[in-house]
Structures are given as structure tokens and as C-alpha cells.
Image (cartoon, rainbow, N blue to C red; front, side, top):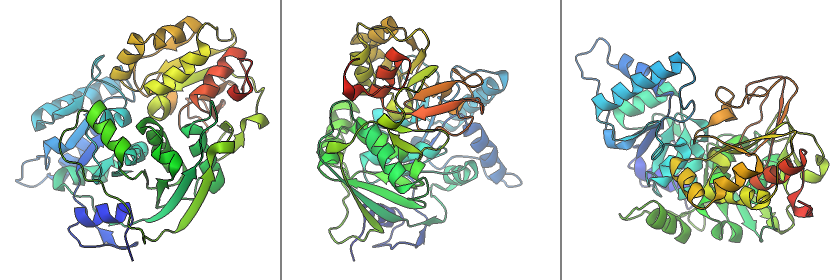
Length: 430
């Protein structure tokens, strides 16, 4: 029996000829990422060396990347002190892949990793963030781990006790209708299989639609795979992967274009035709509470958020700006725009995208996670309703358990901003 992409990656990283679902392996890690929670990892890492004569030294400073993004700039003295602690650790350990709070190289971790070419096909990537699943978009096996697990990775360079996951194959074909996008596809899939439908499994994306999809769209799919319970999402590396890494990330070295065997075994095969897909909305308070937009159109909203690691890339901002250009958002709505990185912010400024959004009444925020996690910028008031291009809508996700969060695409967010209510951009009149 053949192997899936993830089985091949794990076998190679564990030094084995083959692995099967359920095997427990300890794969070598190619990239280990943390953000501000690196302060917790540092504590755990230093504990490993307590009572020994060993020097507390990371396994390979070139394979560790740390990015400040969740609370930037620092919103409290506690956060600022933790960030200071991480800076000191980074300098002492010689970690070069460090992205501080800067207007030229900063941004959200899940955008920085692909943007700087840190992620490559065939690699094992771990991160102390659940949306580390994003990087499967580039053909890597990428998954989230806790601070204790990351401390062991920093010390040993391997991920401990990893069970080889089963894989769900998703075949996607057809062409997206106007104003329907990868965000609508992943919301539809999560609604179809539920938040537990891919528990401890990998979602492997295939089909004509995926082959024609940009890396930006693939990042959206893999980013939200975790919302279906998946350990990771993954797209087979192909010509688009090469184009992105060569042309946009500046990668010049050889790429390991891993593909599943024709006779690989899958736990399930799901087929989707996007040709008839309509805009999808994830309603409070779970990401799998997904409905076609027609069922929630007209819902009044107070705040709109465009951005995040899910939909904060240049094409996302351009879609929103194209809808809002020359128009004004409703006086009853406030709109916050969070570009995913400093590079994207600069590109959007040069192309006039930010000007279009701000002229319409939006507030351009610094690149970062912002209000997505509910601890920094853009909290909601009691009883308020938000419509957001982010990835989670759990109760209290935007800082207030007495509020509601709906999830959508950039096109839906922009169209809804004009009317102050959930609006279908495919119906015209915007």
C-alpha cells in the first residue's frame, strides 16, 4: 500500500523507509515557531537544564523562528516584560529568524513564515499556535504543539511521540462564482463535516480548483483546517508552490516536491464542486455553525474586521477595496483592517488599497492579530455583533462573551459594511 504526503514526510524525518497510520515516531523538526508565548517555552526550556551541568542551548538557532504578533505593540507592562525576556533569549541563543515589532519586517507568524521562505515542501514544521496548520499550503507537514512540547523540540530537535495520522482526501473541482472564494469553501467544508469531523487527521486538498488556486487561497484553507479538528491541512506541492517560493519568497535552493502515492489509503474521500457555491457564514458561537448567506442576510452588525492570518493578504484587501472604492461604510458600522504583514501593508499602501479602504471609513491598523483573539485592539461591547474574516467565533473570542461574532470572506465583509448588515455581494446593488 502506498503512502500519503504526510506519511512520506514523517517516514523521511524519522529515518524510516515507510510508516503506517497509528505508528508513533519522533521526526526531526525542520522549523520550530513561537510568538509571544515563547516566554512560556523559555521557562519550560530552562527547567530541562535545572540541576545539570549542561548548558541551556537550543538544538539549532537557524531552525527556530520567533515572531511578535498577538499583542503588538504591547498592551500592558506584563506583555512588554515578556517580550523583553524573549528578546534577551533570542540574542543570547543567536536566533536569527526573529521578527520584532517593526514596520518593515513584522507581521503575523503564519504570514511571515511563507513570506520569508522559511517553510518548504516536505518539511516538518511545528508551532506553539493551533493555526500552524496554515503552512501545509506549501506542502509541509505543519502542526501546533504546546509550550512543553516545544521546549523539548528546542532541546532535542525532534518532535516526541507523534502518531502518524490518517488522512481525509478532499477533491475540489469547478470554478468559483464571482465574490465566492476559498474562505467560503473552507467554511462550507467545516459545516459539512463538523468541528470534530477531522479530529487527529490530516485534510489533503486535491482537484482542479486547488491546482488553479493561489498560495494565498491555499493558506486560507489550511489555516482553518484545524477548525474541523484536523492536525493539519496540506496541499501537494506543485507549480504554484514553486512560483510562490521562487518569485515571492526568494527561495533558490532545491525543493522536495512530495506527493501522495496513487494507491495511498484515505480514511474518507469528500468531493466538492464550487461552481454552485454561495457565500457562507459561520454563525455564533461555533465555526461549524455554517449557513448560506441567504439565511442570515439582513443581520445588523456593529463591527467589521478584515485581516488576520486567514484573510489579511494583499488579494484579500484588494477584494474589499474594490467593493468599497468610491463608497462609504454605514455610519452605524466601524471597520478595522489588519494587514497580515508589514510587507503586505507596504504593498497595499503603494497600490492605493489602504487609501480606498480608509476613504470609505475603515481604520487601518498595524499588522498583527489584533482583536481576533480578544485580548488586544477592537474588543466588542455588550450585545454587539461583529462580522469578521478571522477564523474563530467562540463565545468571548473578540473579548466579550456577551457579544456575537460571525465569520465570512473579505467580499462579504466589504459589502456588508456599506449597508451595515450582512449582505450578499453576489446579488449586486453594492
